Image (tube, rainbow, N blue to C red; front, side, top):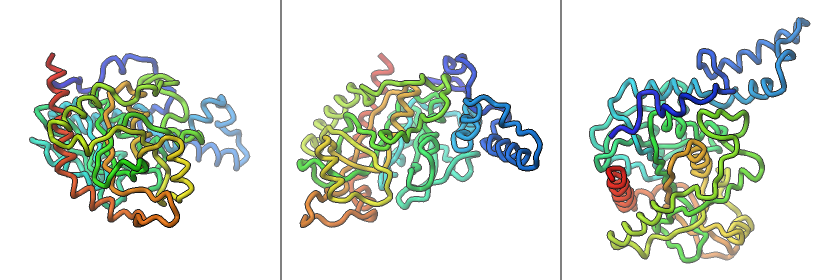
Length: 351
């Protein structure tokens, strides 16, 4: 089962032409054009920018940081030209959870630094490579290392790989992350199946979908009511029971903050009052992008520390070494959970 043509989902390819930067597909085109118009203006000649509509001017600026459809397709084609695997499932490995991808068979590995126009991960615990292969006999691609807002990347760039996944044929996004547990019932090492999220950064207008919308990816105003697939959550609960870890697996609400600092006591109290069960620095913008592309989403958080909501709390201050360490200690459990859920997806796809 491939689930894809070489150029991605054909129904996407037939939709209306993008409003984003086209041309030769170079993400620097808009930046170079913008610089050229500024130079022309400063030299006293008539600026080309003044001849553009307001929408085109906004698009020009935004494309300095966003990836156009053409550039993302170039990345997807680069990958597809170098492997025979046609992924149906995309996996994002969170901090300390890289071994999830080590279960993949018949692999083709791409280092991020070798993929044209691809960012690089700068965070310890994120290897920085894309793996194509087979997991539970399903064709998959997995990111060992993601990109974060606190690294200096805009959210559109952080979640750009999800659109690459879409254009290589991925229909399911399986995202994992390390998170702090706010729910008092959670213990370090527990797993939270993400049932919903609160997009704190989105409240301030910071979204991966900000700017001109390209309908070849999805609609201008995508709904998020059921962002996380209920069937896959139910499947994961059943898998947890089979594994004998049902008491260590919960459902809950995740939120993403910008980081890189961990939260204050007052901030954590506010989040808990809002109904947040776990807090991290990723995933939400990836899920928004995936749902915009009409991908089915499943996500879980590994609880790597308990959040301190009292100033005299006995909980140790959160630190990245602890996060990575707990991730590594629970990699086998998280990997088995992921494999078994994918095994069920494989069964569903053959029905």
